[in-house]
Amino acid sequence: MVEPSDRPFGEALRELLLADGDIYVSAGGNVKWATFAHVLHGVSYDILRRTVRGERAPTLELMEECARVLQVWPTYFAEYRAAGFARQVAAA
Image 1: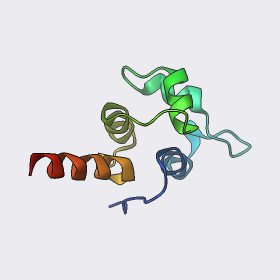
Image 2 (image 1 turned 90 degrees about the vertical axis):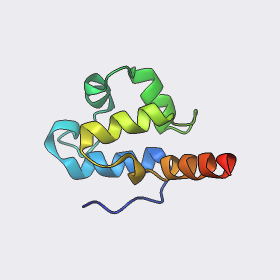
Image 3 (image 1 turned 30 degrees about the vertical axis):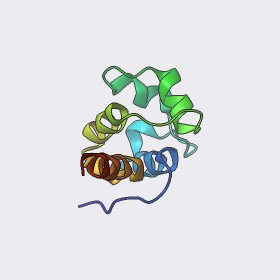
Image 4 (image 1 turned 180 degrees about the vertical axis):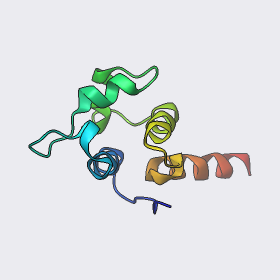
């Protein structure tokens, strides 16, 4: 079980990818974002890149897709948990 992250989406995703190892990490230890984007359904490299850089907010769908590929719960991401809390407050 992976503990949820309190880091921003881009940092949290980077940590997951680095921990995942060979497939998404270059020999130099850098994340291969284009390789990761290629396995995401419905997510372009440009969208992923801008979201990881903090230029746009991560959507629920993006967080869910990243979580699916990396085999963690979407609630790993702080923004996903915050969105769930906001939905609960709005419903109350």
